[in-house]
Amino acid sequence: MTTTKFTPLTQLAAWKSLEAHYPKVCELHLRKLFADDPKRGERMAMEAVGIYFDYSKHRITDETLKLLLQLAEESGLKSRIDAMFRGEKINVTENRAVLHVALRMPKGKSIFVDGEDVVPEVHTVLDKMAHFSDRIRSGEWKGHTGKPIRNIINIGIGGSDLGPVMAYEALRHYSKHELTFRFVSNIDGTDFAEATRDLDPEETLFIISSKTFTTLETMTNAHTARDWALKNLKDPAAVARHFVAVSTNAGEVAKFGIDTANMFEFWDWVGGRYSMDSAIGLSTMIAIGSDAFHEMLDGFHQMDEHFRTAPFENNLPVLMGLLAIWYNNFFGTETVAVLPYEQYLKRFPAYLQQLTMESNGKHVTLDGKEVSYQTGPIYWGEPGTNGQHSFYQLIHQGTKLMACDFIAFAQPLNPLGRHHDLLLANVFAQAEALAFGKTAEEVRAEGTPERLVPARTFEGNRPSSLFFLERLTPMALGKLVALYEHSVFTQGTIWGIDSFDQWGVELGKALAVRIISEIEKGSEVDLKHDSSTNTLIQRYQRSKEQGHGNKKPSVNSG
Ligand code: G6Q
Picture 1 (cartoon, rainbow, N blue to C red):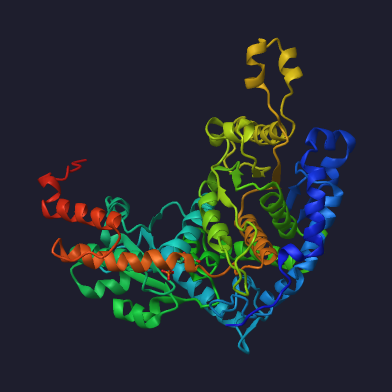
Picture 2 (cartoon, helix red, strand yellow):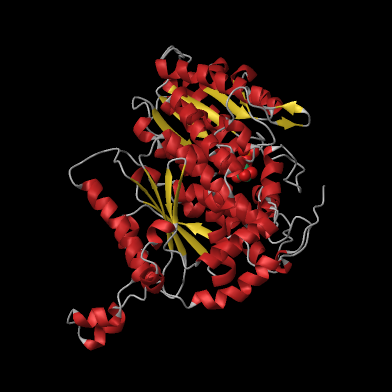
């Protein structure tokens, strides 16, 4: 493992200046900041690769920005960006290059890993995916009994599921509507049962998406899928027509019985949560077609190039990442709410939870030292306007400060009467209400009885970003995802952590393997866990041995 030497974050001059600067800014109200600078809303905004970014409603001054940009410089962000694009092994704990940016490099460009240009192989796989998805979409690829494929089920979990689900939902407008897409991830049998309940195995294709092809959940669901398909199709030869794999592990794919000619490859320099634009996006390509998939890749690439080349003061992901640091480390906020005003982005917050929290939920630095400051915030959210009638109360009037990311599009994909005007009026209104609130005087002036004035006052000064795009297209989605990827990298670099490993998932996995064998051995087994875990396991074993209370499961006759 390479060790990286760097000055601890809290000893950087810019960090110290920000500590001294914070008390001056934290009392400032956005009402005053806007009143003092009538052009603030125009000045503190930028546009890059078709994304308009309004950051004027943040609790910052020009001095704050200057110091944050200095922090980015002193943290060595530029050299880390260059190292990533050069294919250096910046994932130090796994000794791997981090090259999701190579997945969207146009043909003819190069990125080298261990002396080998990886871009040509990326395009070989993309071409193979295009050929396959064209055959599915046209009906040329037939199931074992000669029927065309109508249903596509992606089986995968984590990075091999969240991207495909999110992208399918986000781009559903562009999807081939004659095809049905389902996504099975959970080890809970309900996920598989409900996904397949109404489907005909003769018309169903499973994509087994697993980088390692050893993940417990995915392999369990894959075997269940094979049993489900073969129960009907009878002939083991049917597997070749109804199962394809996306993996780095050809050996395990072949062992499962999938023809490796029907395997779509990716590489260990693609992290799971950074893989939706690799072959893991096969379901996306089948849904929207290879041309639209390439448009999405182009969107990713445009943002990559912007991140790589734009000066930090005009660099969208850098500014976004720096603002996240400002709130997380100086205001002490714990969460970021992601609020897309676009129903097709309903799974975007869930996707971002993995991207952000698996990347930056770390407590040691690249040189193995415990951090003395907060790292990754909690990301969460729901589409607007739904959230307005639910948790926005806490954002407006609760005791917790958080920054919000609003995302909106000028053009509706489904124009229906006044709907889009109402949607956009709401997103603008929410950002305005959060920033400026409503003073007690304003509430009184409305004739509100004095006893209700405190409850009806809005303090305001709640910060938000607004990302405004023209239209949700495959290209726009690529830009948005890459924006968050690079903002995460910016934050991780400043915290000096490895944003590309995920050791935190290992302990629970190992313990589960031990408990599975204990559960399956039954109550005779000598349990050596703590008294809580032992009791829980025994309780489950008793229930199981008693036939779960001998209750017959209720059967859904419908
Ligand atoms: C993502 C993680 C993790 C991974 C899943 C599935 O960055 O590595 O979410 O994607 O554990 O792994 P496989 O693709 O190997 O099944």
